Image (cartoon, rainbow, N blue to C red; front, top):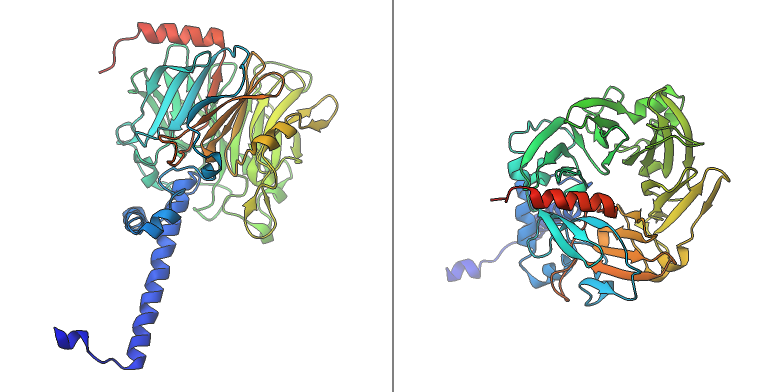
Length: 455
């Protein structure tokens, strides 16, 4: 043994060993980097399955690696250290009796998996909780996608994205690249639509049917099976797939192939559709059934009319890589402007994400919350949304930082929520929460209280 320790090696052998060690370290680092990115951003899928999980866990052993990974754990938020020791609900001023309920979807920082809570905004009490378990809900789903990586369907990675609560207390949701599910008040599956994998927003139309972006596989427009062909997924109230239309094909039919298939700027995610907002009634600038569609990669919003296969209107910018379109009134829409720029070394936000308002009547874009947004420094590199309440409050979800903000009708920040378990611990991500008006919320609460007790 002593001879082994003091064995003399030629210099070239020692150098060769160092080269192999260096290559191994680089390879190991690339696996950990891929796994970390997939945990921080649910739109990125891990490439290494159990190997990535093992490498990630191994890298967390040394204290130095633990520090490096502090904001990059499984579904941890980023940028949360700027919030100091704030935790949970923080009230700054009178919230002017905010009305209604919040369907709060988040990674619970204690349980470390996704939960959906119905919260009474008047006192922040939790009325009901769902804890969807993907390993049960999706256990019988065929797994054949070339794009979805199914390691995201484990409980520690799954996110209940933009859930929709129906009057009877049932919940419709997907897991960000998963089938669409309807759950009862106990979280048990009522139906599943596995004809497509759905992602990002989920909204209901005037007929009670659902719209959400999908991935169309196999694609009829892209040759590479790894390219994401975003579709307009339309699902009936009882879970049947009504239609699934490629947005890329729509643009090609309308003579706008330059938005999708330019030879020298091709991307495997050319549009990155993240919101489909149906118009619920006729207005001077749209008709009931029209769809407002947000496409992040192009900083583009389009108004599409399925009934006539017509792009009625579209506009790119001044918002940048936006999310979440809401119809404010019969001539104004709001857009959550992530305001992310890339000048050659990755995306960054110069001052703050913000809310843009576009007025069809005047063709003007305004940013009435710009000053207060900059004061709060909203940093939504991806995701993010805003909700206008019936009492005039604005609710902003800064998903990737694990923060929720509430502004009163005068534009003053009155409350925040920090998704943390301890004052010095990490924040955890949210998953697109939803405002529910008071009257609707009261009906839902009454039905939940009448429902049988869950096991």
